[in-house]
Image (cartoon, rainbow, N blue to C red; front, side, top):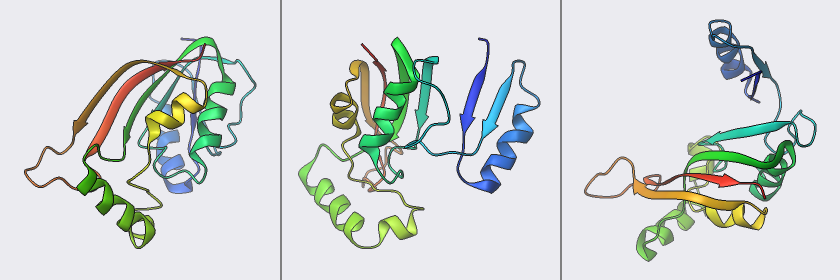
Length: 154
C-alpha cells in the first residue's frame, strides 16, 4: 500500500480520524469531503471501502459513480451497508420511517435504500455478496438488514 485517503465530512469525526491516522503503520491522509464529490483524480485507486456510508449520502447514485470514477479499471470496492429489507413487511416499515422521522433521528440515514442495485447501476460488477441481519434479533429492526460484499469496476 502506498497511501490511504480517508474522506470524512463531519468535523468532529474527521478530527478523531486524524488522531488515529497518526498511529497507522502507513501514510493516511484524512480530508474533508463527501462521497458525492471525492477529492481525488480519476483512476487513482486500486481499492475503496464504503462502510455504513451509502445510507446517509444525499445522492447515492452520484456517490457510487464517484467511487467508480476514482477506482482504476479492475479496482475493487469493499462495502458494508445496511439496506432495504428483502421482506415486504419490514421494507414497508423502512419506507414509512424514511418518509417521516428516520432521516432526522438517524443522522440522515435512509433505511430502505437498495444499495446493491445502485452499485450495479453505477457500472460495478458484484463479485461477492452476503445478506444478513445485524443484530440478529427475533424482531428485526429497520436498520438490521445488511450487505457485505465486493464489487469490481470493469
